[in-house]
Image (cartoon, rainbow over all chains, first blue to last red; front, side, top):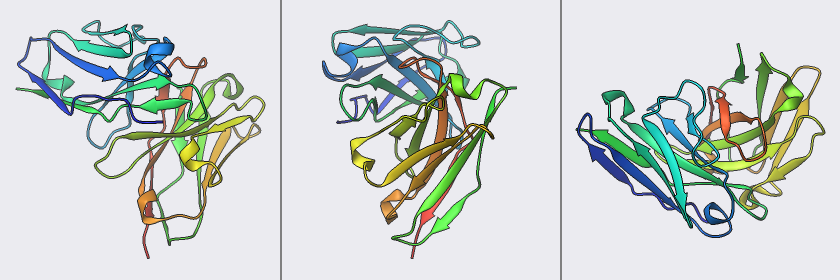
Length: 111
Length: 119
């Protein structure tokens, strides 16, 4: 099972929007609505930001939104803030032995 | 409050085994799946496997099958991850993380356990 494909980095100015893509296959992203997104600051454990493609856990700002089309899921951060600068990982349920697969991660830089 | 507390850092020699624990508190232990995810230095997240604390059933990533064993102790609300035949590439931070329903995302994470494999 290969890692999901994410851009290595994206950047934006405060207040702007950025979108991170996460491309898989019909055996993972495209086949199930079980895509989640995690934010990780340096030296910290990951934090769940989006689950089931587009649902936000309690406490996550509504600036964070998720969507999916075909084999590609996306995370959009609207109204970018300095504290959003972090690494972001997508994760999908996958058919087969390896039941979860992560993306390689995207570094978001706030200019 | 809900938390997962992991055991301390380990230093192991190549070929040895390591056992990392993850103690849950603040919720019903058997109502949530538990995953193990690792992160090598400067690298991304890698899923290793999961255990259902209710019945003890496990699923392992193909990459780790034969080398990893996940168990649980319901009396202490603790899950364990045992990785054998360690090599330098296993040097990483190992996390446990719970999931409420199958496939719905890992909402609480442990603080991480650093495992260093070095001769």
